[in-house]
Image 1 (tube, rainbow, N blue to C red):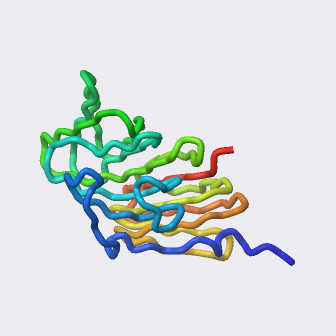
Image 2 (cartoon, rainbow, N blue to C red):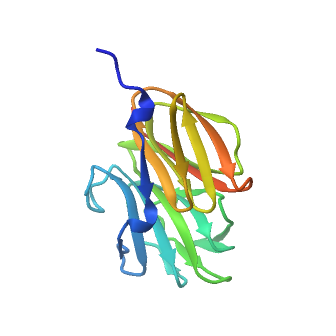
Length: 201
């Protein structure tokens, strides 16, 4: 029996329709976008993607055993503070840190929104990237994919399959084989966020 085309395993997701929930430490709210296993709690997920609304400066929740990747989606500046070190997070620049680290943030220019990729060590591995106005092809390895258009839109195509991402929409799914995607930004400078996840070998 022939295997289905990997593109048939991808689906559109409207991020704005997802419910908000309190942070683990109660200091803010987040929208859980994807989680594996599905409906796993904070202590049991293998990996998790979420969007957080950050209204005020304060401490981050701690997640022992979790590798975290964060990216600023809205707002101009977030300062991440770990011990005596300060890292200035600018829009669409990923930053990785250990979930057990004591981390705080300052918002010198007001509220922000950030995207978080969390990976449990020994269970999942992955990466987080972003591009401005990407108009070419990209090769997706076998694994789980999350392509998100936070502002503007994108036309995506894989062979005879195509999708239109509006602002706030994502294309996501797990593919057992590599897949080549054609990308077209609309408008020309629209950002595209990409998270990739695979089991730890």
